Length: 262
Image 1: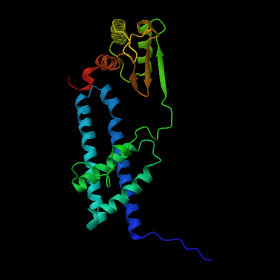
Image 2: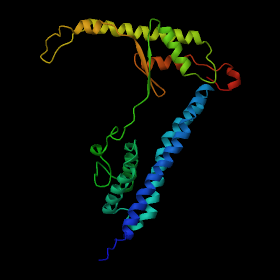
Image 3: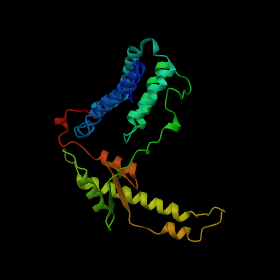
Image 4: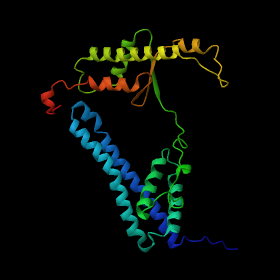
């Protein structure tokens, strides 16, 4: 008995090719986006605010550039079939199979949907040729643990702030490191104090709307103040204001040498 393996039809080949080209297009977009983003530390260190604004615009325009390029690529590849929904449904399925192993494939799906919506001029939602909310699970393929570092207050907020700034140093020195440390410590103390006051003035209630007998005591109790850093992001008490303080007090040692106006 002889077994024969069915050879893929030209349509199957076309579907696989289009799906792979769209995956590659997103990978190219992502690579270029990262190149622009990696300029951020140098822009910050050199006080190149105009350069930072230029990069921000470039990142925004980059997405539309790659979406439009992919639309044109599919027009050339599919030709008269470019508006055939059946073939796009097949491309979508193959695209989904290719990106399934990726840990962050949700944005990749969004890119695909942007291409099909522009191709068809979609108004509303067309689940046959685009990914919809039910298809998206941002954390679905995330298996690795996010590395974090906890900065614990062991009695002196300023030491905590000093340790934090030392871990996230720049090539250009702070103009006044000690003053920056003090500002961050003052902000954290103020936020912690205001948070305790709000908690002390509130009363926890259970699901029946009755006061929780341990609610106020549990809220007033003060654990160690902590700042948690995940990657390069500062999280915890006063997250946004702490970042603003760090940015506000960082200046180039020789402003004239940087050649950038305020």
